[in-house]
Length: 532
Image (cartoon, rainbow, N blue to C red; front, side, top):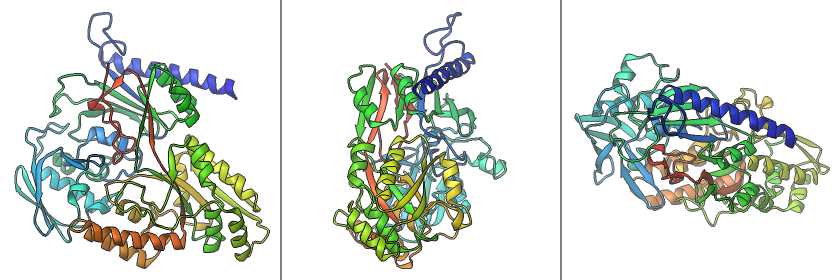
């Protein structure tokens, strides 16, 4: 196995060298220094990503991995730093809100151009957000409070709300808040963006892509921040699911940054001067969803069995190398709305056996399918540890690693009997509110998106919707409502909360300027980075 993996890694390395050479050839040479004619060749950043870089090029729709790409191609009105609790002006130079929280006014930055050459105006902001709301896909729900968007002049725009939502957090979302060229929206068919076209204001433009595999971006010469100082000319984000390959590429300097390496690799790399280990807090957590529409998991007692049989401590220690803590509810520790006093399931196999007998399965005899994303070693190890514990009480767990798109497709099958029994996946915020988790993952859905437990509870829905309506004017009241909703969720047990993770990035030692922001998980804002 080691030999085969090494052979695969060698082939991959050669492929990357060829890829970089092809990118550079259009600009006159190899990837560093000058070519034979003395022309400067492009400075290229390489992100060895563990999954598909993007699933949908439409910035109004994409609601998954594409956060790592789109936040370099598009920009939002604001950007949020939860560590310093700062809302940073981006396309908006300044903003204000009325005393009742129902009117928000944004003054736009002047001199900003879109990649299609048009100038940023208030009409572009209105067209972008109106389009996202009208499509109603992905994270469009974040704009539910908006009653009307009013253009006051070329650089001033008002958002009139139905209730006092936190529009500063919404406007800084990593999804569904991107500003597009109104000209591109109006002059192209609806599927123009999804076909692999873009019209953002970001520092990088799309150069080429291979769906499901790689994205190549090139700098936008007219970017409003300018290009003085050290910056990359081009950025490559490529799917490399093999952890050994990602590690070797960063160690050798053939990739600049990666993440999701096995934690034994992290420990081994700490003494390697060729790399930097960046350990940062995150708001990303691993959740395990039970198919509540399919027997035997339509029985709450069986779901509770699965909660008590999960080896939380071993998963944190062996799958995460200690770079995590057991989850307590769906909202990660450190984020407002986290319930530090919520009931927390613990590993208790005797309790699991007792509940299994009460559910009518004294001898076990259950066969369950558990899916996880292929290429994520922590998810894989968690599944293997879980399988071992369940086998002790007579439950056979088939664990199946799948590409995320395939895992998600299976989970959204119209026939509950054809879906998996148990699914695990990470969640991270679209914007800095508990509503991101509670609405997206557990609010009743007519059409399956991310409520992959297929759970419905009217009282829960009411509480979180009320919490969202209060969050723009009285965060404490909103937080209390969110805690009440989580109490219902934990009692009904449509899922378990495996762990809240830390981000452990591995970069080449020459890669500088990178800062991790937990509201934009897995995102590298490449404009701020450079080679030393």
